[in-house]
Amino acid sequence: MDIIDRLQEIINYSDLNVSSFAKKIGVVDQTIRGIVVQRRNKPGFDILAKILQTFTWVDAEWLITGKGEMIKQKTTTKTENSPSLTELIQYLREKDLKIERLIEEKTELKVKFEMAKKTDMQKEEQGHVPYIPQNKMSQDM
Image 1: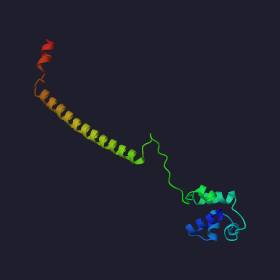
Image 2 (image 1 turned 135 degrees about the vertical axis):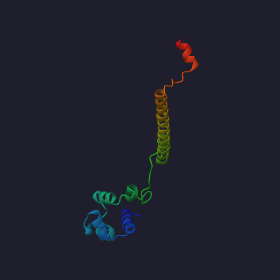
Image 3 (image 1 turned 90 degrees about the horizontal axis):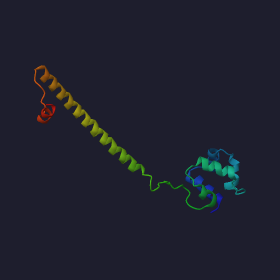
Image 4 (image 1 turned 45 degrees about the horizontal axis):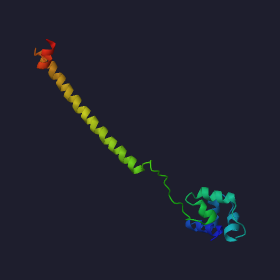
């Protein structure tokens, strides 16, 4: 399969005709017709660049050399030290849950503190002396 056949394969895969393909990549119909239909010319750099810019799913190596597959393979550049997106999402969810638990705990402690404070104020108003542990009293004397 030569480069002209690969161009024809892109046109067929895209469900286009020569004229609509030329229009889509921004060249004159006769230019593509001379390459694909009449097989008079080979596509130059400008045509290939326009094809790759328009059809971003086309693998450049396949288009130029015929090696590999027509459609680009999705590549991930995951290294040993870089976590996957799924791992990051899971980590963030765990942190969100921990934050929610801490907020709930803070709210509970705040309520308990306010109740204790209110109780102490009521005792003071009634003349009760707050409880002081024995150790504390013996140390003060």
